[in-house]
Length: 95
Image 1 (cartoon, rainbow, N blue to C red):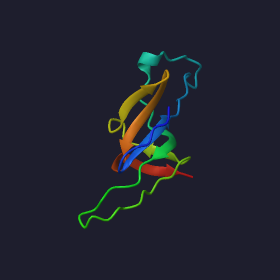
Image 2: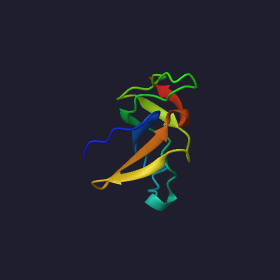
Image 3: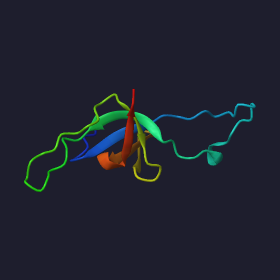
Image 4: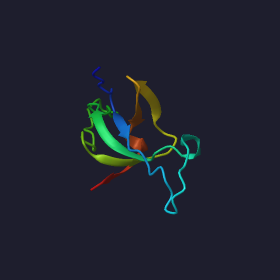
């Protein structure tokens, strides 16, 4: 399935966190917090400003981004989890 985000929305594939602590304790899925970084899979064309002009997106497909913990909406497609976030929920691009 092909997903094309609208306006200033971004489709993110969350990156899994370490499942084991440094001391070797394995954490169950219920103990893990939501991931706060992921890879951009698709981007929308950008938002429209008050003059009716399209503002281009800052992030691009393939960028690794940090995002707010509770901003994105969860989406499950073909048993794979994705997040859809507004560009304002993205805090930084990791380089």
